Amino acid sequence: MLSRIANNLFWLGRYLERVEDTARFVEAQYYSFLDAPFIQKEEIALNSILSMLGNPDYYYSRYEKLDEKEILFTATLDRDNPVSIITSLSFVRENARTTRDILSEDLWEAINKFYLFLKGYSKRKFLKAPVELFEDIIENCYIINGIIDRIIMKDIGWAFIKLGIDIERSAQLARMILAKLESIESMEKPSKVAENFQWRTLLESAAALDINKAVNHRATDKEKVLELLTLNLKSPRSIAYNLQKIHEYLTMISIEKEEKPNTPEFTAGKMASALKFTTMEDIYSEGEKEFYSKLLSDIYSLAQTIEKRYFVL
Image 1: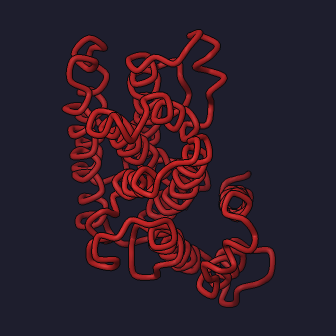
Image 2: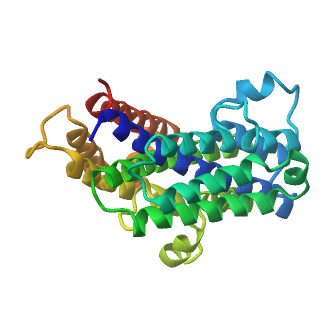
């Protein structure tokens, strides 16, 4: 496969996952200060959105203070924001367009239809009922991911798409956790109820609330939530699980019979193994923010290694 095509498929997957994760996180934060105003201050929720997006300077270059409507628009429909949902989706479509000759026609049509729908969505309509659009975005992501999993041939092209999806999901989970740790840190002596509410909101953001019900019997304390989203090897909404899948896809893609040091598959396998034998005590010992910041940096470093190995001409 040409490196240009592999690169486009990889980034199609990454941007697609970024669309869904951003929509889920913003929706969960928006609900949080509507449903529990005495527990969740609006300012904390809005700052959490900016933190997760990763570019608060962009927002403050345009607006002087936190504003619910402007932050929702900035995260969702602002075409000038490089990490907004509409911008990410435009990149999904562009990467699909340039590889259209090898993509499933169903996949291209689903992506194009989704993009045209969001492109034509007005700011006024969105701000009148934000939740409706978030639900539509998540539903469209479900449709596209369903096509990827059920219709596309499970070849190297598919592996590059899935690789991009799982790299991005791992990174976004780490970013969500960091954003939530910062939110709790910003609260003045939060009650146990208020802190657990933040962890529950994180589960909603990560689409792991139902999994948590099965694993932790609805408990939403810090240790159980972090363990589920970080170390659980059976949950597709955990970093450890996704690192394992990343290793599998890289092994499928690699032409080498042995995993050699400094190759992407070796690095991914090493990261997956390290996390497999990590405990919550290890995370607490290192410090939660330090642990997740380093993990996020390692995931991005792995992504760069993949790009250098497969995409740089």
